[in-house]
Length: 314
Image (cartoon, rainbow, N blue to C red; front, side, top):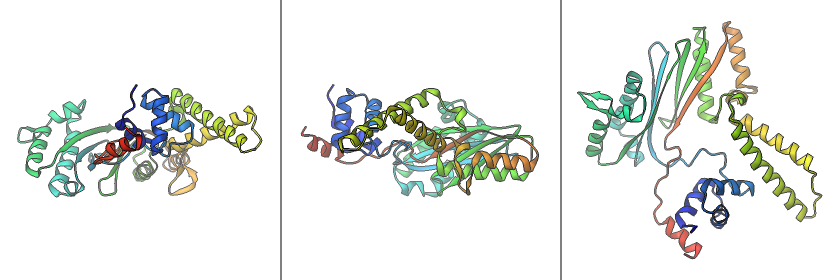
């Protein structure tokens, strides 16, 4: 399969590895992007393996929580420039979209866009009117709605609309401490971006995949050390190293196992248990939703592909 400059560009942006390393990985992976990422990680060349994706698009995220604190909605709408994202009309539109998501609770994005926003006009029709008026493309990217009748939904917006988080807590308590806990957890999620609630939620396929990558990394490191004249580690030691690295990684990606941002001597799970004792009722973190503006999207970089092509000799 022919490896194009665009493919090298995409892999480089995902991993931040060197250009020629990306090309070699793609050749070895026969053009399979996911496999190429794994190859770079195995060789210790990926500098961005833990990043969710390159943050590049502009826009805003917004959320709203119902008065009874039982429901919440979160939306992301993208614009081409930060200038438009700071426009009051755009801000009001994003806020109105969040209110609509909470009110309509649409089944999917298509239903959300078709929902009536104002004066018989759908959200998408109003968006197109804004595009014509402002003169810049805008996109309704995603939304989510959380509901918890036996507990509460708490929202938190960070960085002037760049990150927004909803936290769904189940509990029979109606103490204000539950709201405070929800806010603390939302700030934790905004800051640390966990992939799972607890280690019990981690997909076994994910664990097997990560273990395979970590094992390949450790074996490569062992071979490199041996080439430098260092004593090779026996396989049983390498396996213990891999288990240790995997457990460390799981603590980083699982919310309840993460050190609490306000007190690193405690895990988030311990903080939840402590508050549960204070209010005299069990508290369960049912789910969290975190939107970051532009997460996984990319801005066009002028002439970058041409630069790659030149360095590849194409």
